[in-house]
Image 1 (cartoon, rainbow, N blue to C red):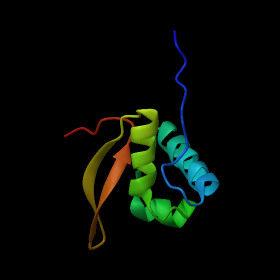
Image 2: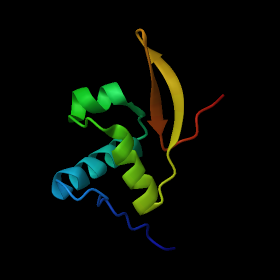
Image 3: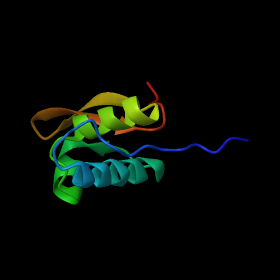
Length: 87
């Protein structure tokens, strides 16, 4: 069986070390079976551009990440998971 090799690098030319670390943090969070949304990413991990970090994981490592719209208070945002959401 082939082992999955993950690339946590980022397409950004600025702060590549910091952003690569953020990619790994977000992946480890999702890998643990939990979901994440922009509010959690900002408050817990200080990741202010979750969409870009998820884009790095999807495009550079080929990771399939599912999303759905949720409501937090009066704000709509997306929630992300490595597992497909039930309808």
